[in-house]
Length: 406
Ligand SMILES: [Zn+2]
Image (tube, rainbow, N blue to C red; front, top):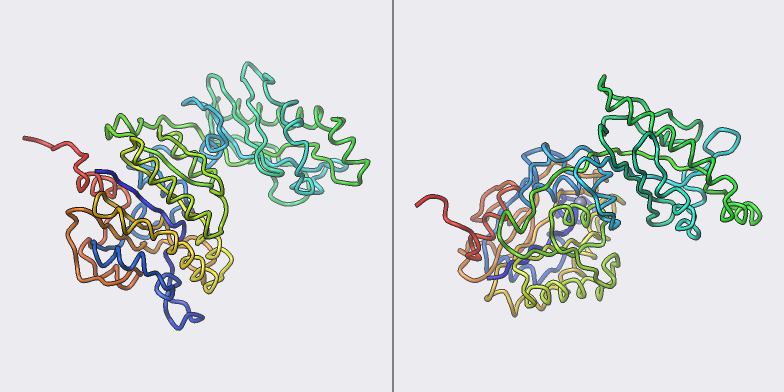
């Protein structure tokens, strides 16, 4: 049987005064998720472990069966993989901003949110070599970019060049006594200096200065991370697995896990049709030979960060309307709906609260839960599980797992 796992990013929440003491999920009219909850089994899930405030990247790693404490050293590698860079274990990757340096100080951390010309600017930095280390550099959305260092003897245990504020560029420092950290810090400092040398008179910037726009004349790396060796998903579970997400770090986690990362039109969008397109693409992947598909929908998290409970409730209703096709297929496979973490509107950031989880499909035991929500899921038959156990549960139900022992 096939398995679809839908992750509503940051959907978990706390009771909200603005919603009469309900959470956004509880307050939302969600006939499709309610039908699945009623049909299946419900519970709570700690994405990593009880009380741990998970990031989207570490939570997805945990849910996909990896130990984030072992494989995660920073966000950079997942961001870079999500941008389509081919990474190798041992590479050190960073997130970067194009910024504006004026009289030796950062005067705009985002170079006026530059939109055009970053491909040309990035091309002038990509491929350089510093101290025998290869520099791979690629632009991302607007002022964002990714940097990868490839070579022997590197470390990700270094500080950021990005001062995260206006003022002087921070000198990158090693965060331990190892020669690797010292060397990598030196290389990044050289890269930052060289980025200014190569970008300050670049035609793209000459034009920006003429147009009175802040030039993108320096690159500020941050969030160094060592590219981990993730055992391939296919090898571990012996199945064909795909992922649909518009979020760079989620795409990166799935790509490094060896999953097929699908491009779906509107994957970043928040219109009803965009949510629908993802569900349709997921079902298509499964009917074309895929065994497992993960679909991430980012929108609830954004409303949590904006502390907007009504908006979060409404977007959950929109998402639910995209789940109508699932009612027709649920008896032929396994469907799970959950979140990667809670982003309570009252907190405006990720919290360590567990998230609701429903599993429905052929052969799935049922409980007395009648609707999908935090309170109702707490009464469900699954109890409280850890994210790391989720795939074992789903693949077992789908008949995709091997017996342990005789
Ligand atoms: Zn998330």
